[in-house]
Image 1 (cartoon, rainbow, N blue to C red):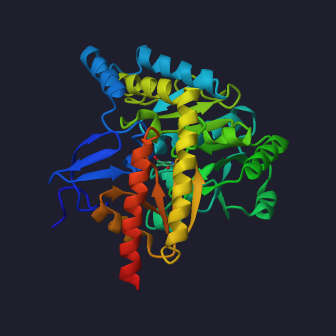
Image 2: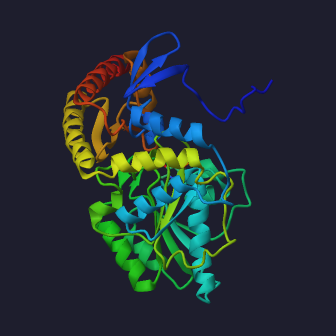
Image 3: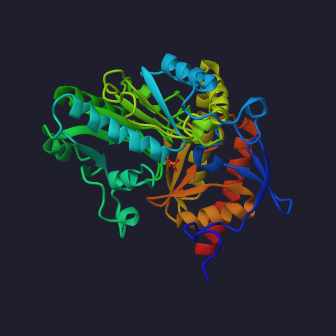
Length: 393
Ligand SMILES: *Cc1c(COP(=O)(O)O)cnc(C)c1O
């Protein structure tokens, strides 16, 4: 008999009932140090008092009115994003994959309105992840995601991640946009080198192509800048955001320049829930905290400390780990052992990590994790690695 919850998830046998900061408490009372943060969502930890206060105040005032009316919290968050990024304008969604939907629509509408309606093709890369909607799976195009779900949304050219020659060859006057994650998350914490991101920007400028960055996972302070592309000193035309921006409340956004957004006039797009008062009240508070330079400086300091400890771990367990990779507090342990064995061994030590493709264990702690919790987390990973090593001996 089919379970009452559609069986699309392979869940670990853990049931968390409460959380505080970087810690989660299981129904049986065990405490776990959370280095997954709800897959880079709980950017400010669990039950953050400032976020609880923002949500509670909004909940007592007004939950939902729809986008038929003005929403002050939405305006506040949009203004903050515009003030602190490349963007001139923002549309709010409830998730990352909805942001992907709009990014695709926006790029195509741009060229339609410019009198080039045949310019619809979007270049994407292997190992990418853009969510599970029809556009999201067609964009990423991996067999695992698309098999059985055809016919797929047409108009995506999939290139090998890092193949510069293929990219040059693929450029034509049919290309509307290039869509890429500055740091691939699900793909196994694979950063696109800054020179490549700069190269992509130059290529787009030469050919008038729109650059769409998917910062759903790597954005909102995760890499130590507010958005990951800032490290390369470039800016996109369109950017997808979600995960960390709601701090645990479902919220996403598409940010764009005035030019890139020029086709999106009244009535061309919409969402019932997108930019809801509850989500935006939390998002505005998240943005106020993460958008602060002193906060981001702390993320960088902690990231340096964590990376150094992880390098030590890799050196101590060469049979289990191969390398540390990533950027800021978006870190991956490339494994020699099976990544899911490391994750499972972590459960027994009371530490939560997340597997990713390419045999990587992802570490995506809350951005405000304490120094003491970083040290404890690496101790727990050390104990987990020791068990994996013994089991494989
Ligand atoms: C998680 C993710 C998405 C999809 O976000 P959802 O909120 O799950 O729809 C898209 N792109 C990237 C890079 C992601 O990590």
